[in-house]
View 1: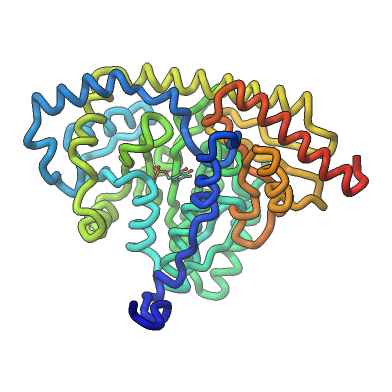
View 2 (view 1 turned 135 degrees about the horizontal axis):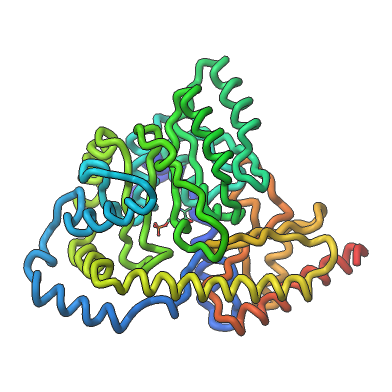
Length: 407
Ligand SMILES: Cc1ncc(COP(=O)(O)O)c(C=O)c1O
């Protein structure tokens, strides 16, 4: 074994940390733990029978091409179908505006690669998606977090941060937003807030990275326009993915952006993986074209709505006074705030003994905040497990309160 291995790793490797969530996911694999921890879709939503038929069809009709290398930009039919779907969002894209990625995590990585130099500032929500924060930090970004109110990322805070940075002659590389059912907070930005943020992005000349894996998992209420729809001029880069609306295991996502950004992204992707698996793209395209996709998506939305309702009902019944939670109109998560003195990481250790898991919210904050918050996923566990898990979680919180004489 080579000596002093750590000295030989690159600076980028030095910035990489193991994901707290991935580590936690290992725990969720223990059969007796009820896990609200990961962001996993429900296994019941996977259309296994339909996919068997479609896979055979693709192999019969396009066998050799489907097993061959594909273009870096992605399967043409799949891109055309995605572009067509975006029309209902009021977006009229050309093929130059959309590239397939190996799910949106690759989008986050390669967008970071093409935009971030070590020390550059990236603006994120506080809290924000850990996988995004890790990707930006890996390239040496300095992350500045902007808090939320119930209308989304706070525009007044964003304005003051951008103004301060301007005084220091710093232009952030981009503002990272998850406008729909934000992971982890479950908040959706209102149209007014989206417009305010876009205006700031123009005034301060900053790109917006719109990451929206949950947009189509809406249970109720009106969809708010995409950032890209509000500003198709090139200011916004949008990441999309099939992970939460079809299957995560295919690892298929896409990037919608100005053609010059797409071109650079394609160059970066060529050094990353040459192309996203051809066969899976063709299967996904056939699944979309056959109409199965929309039907299955409706099934997913109905099932998650039911699970969210059940969970909120359980919280109302069992949670002690002093615990609050968001009630998202869609997505996979809700965010719980515990009494301010309570430490969620400590609570998690107890919860694991009671065989229930969640993610301590502090991992989503770039500034060590959120120590009394937790993220709860309601899509993965079955309805019965959700009910039981809520009872266990409430019990652990009550115990903690009793120990601190606050119950
Ligand atoms: C906000 C956000 N972006 C990106 C991802 C990564 O998704 P994938 O790479 O599966 O498309 C996730 C996964 O949970 C997410 O929540």
